[in-house]
Image 1 (cartoon, one colour):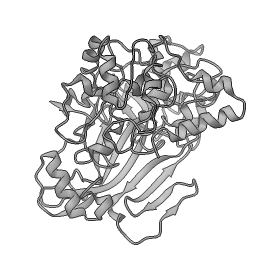
Image 2: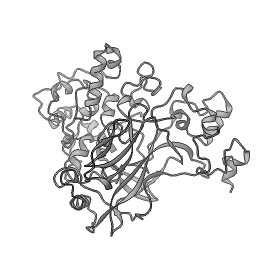
Image 3: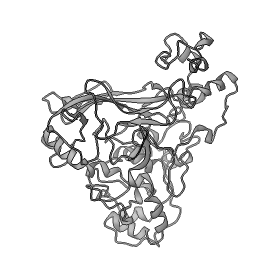
Image 4: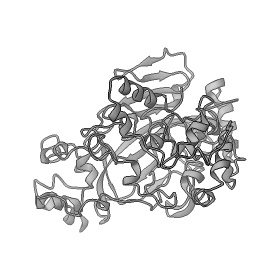
Amino acid sequence: MTHRFTCRLGMFLALALGLTALATSAMAKAENDHSYFVQGPLESGPQVTAQCLKCHEKHAADFMKTTHWTWALKQDVNGKETVRGKKNVINNFCTSIAGNEPRCTSCHAGYGWKDASFDFSNPGNIDCLVCHDTTGTYSKDPSGAGHPAKRVDLMHVAQNVGKPTRFNCGSCHFYGGGGDAVKHGDLDSSMEYPNRQLDVHMDTDGNNFACQECHKTRDHQIPGQSLAVSPGGKNHFSCEQCHEAAPHKQSRLNQHLASVSCQTCHIPFFAREVPTKLSWDWSTAGQEIPESTDALGKHAYDKKKGHFTWGKMVKPVYLWHNGTASAYQAGDKIDPSKVTRLTYPNGSIKDEKARIYPFKLHSGKQIYDVKNKTFITAKVFGEGGYWRDFDWAKAAKLGMAASGLPYSGEYGFAPTEMYWRINHMVSPKEKALGCLDCHGDGGRLDWKALGYQGDPMDNPKFARANSRKK
């Protein structure tokens, strides 16, 4: 099953129900008829790119400078300049792409990244179609190192290209982690045709924003970087890009903006229609436990992967966030008796740049090196991978070799956490949090955990300004 099977099925059902206008609204139209420029036969992705490069050499050069191509960014992490990105981070999903490239790079905007030998300097490896298809028929082979699925009519797609739509962006970002809504609790297939209740910006009967309406793109550089892979990234933007700094009629609400992000009140829940993964315990993988599903119809146990928990209509976790983050770096030492935070937001009540912000928390229990006390980049896919042989020792050895990291030969499992910013699924203003959601009995904010002495509405001395002086 390809990444885009679910979204294509949804479109076909919509058409069958006579909702042609709705299905068409999220699809772009080719800006130019490329049938004159693109000549066949076309039997592979690189053959398509060769045709594109005849006119678009500069665009290719620009694109090769972006993180969508490099999967790495020079940034400050934990006070040290480093190069970090999807290509070398450790997460608590499938742990790392190292050794697993043919599977993981099915979401790379390129062709042929099957191992560390991939040539990032060759523009002929760029996949132009994954972002510019307007037919809704393009998809990648799920384990083909980024190459198109064999059934794709490359000539038809290449002759009908245009600006990216939610379909293009969503083909990867909705399905990160190998499935719908697995990683990003606020990005999933329901965002292809959202109504106003799900997201006021992308509402197909209203604003119907494409992703780049907010992620305004120039020279293929797309602002907005994931806290998980680019904690030191600075290419961000805010709601003030479109909204006033004091947007509310009530001054009391505007006063909140000194301490509370817009997302906190306007995204009360995430994973509203499609369940998202909330925890992954690798330590139970390989056991002869009957596979099972939970009340949401999602896998609770899978022999290849272990135990999971999922959530729907999830309340975010609230933490102070100043726009930067810290992260575990491959090779860092850990204390296996404690929870290691793989990525987490920076900020505190005393940080004037910080605001209370909503996050998805994903918990894990993952393989680590007992002697070196470092997390292991496990090879799970392909020959020698855990999913094939159920041999952790082999998976650890091969994965660490692919990462260029030392491995002692002894492994165990240790607890981890990752935080993911929640920015999408913005509710209509009438569905935003009200005063009592935070300040009433049993409100959703843990005031003491946030650094307050108590609810600041109960006593002025609990307010943030006074907390900063202590």
